[in-house]
Image (tube, rainbow, N blue to C red):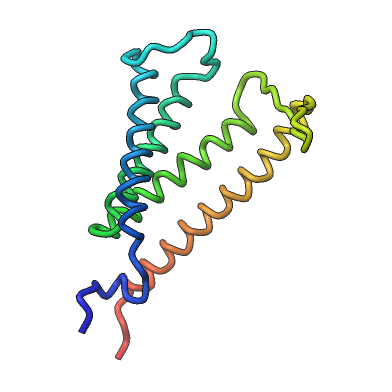
Length: 158
């Protein structure tokens, strides 16, 4: 008889080294970004050309990712929930890059180390296609989850 919960049957837990190294590191990075956002960590004002809401989204992405990793071995449901939140933050960033206000400056790197500018329209199109695909993935997951819940809530005819 296994001591693993039934919902986690067949899944191998994350290696402890991953949990202990990357979880706190991601969480600390999120706290650092929150510190910059709130002015607790000094930053060069000219270097940050991003809206405060986006900085908050980045901080939340790192914090939820780190917490999710730290909880993965002991609280897998909570870790999964935090992972969904982190994924939604990630998708939100791609949507902001593709569709958000303001100018974007993109470059394309080459193997020689040189970078050439890329048009904003082309870059936003690439980010928009990827963001759209991720949006569809989230909508499909919501639809599938609601469908499964409604099927489980229906009384069964015997």
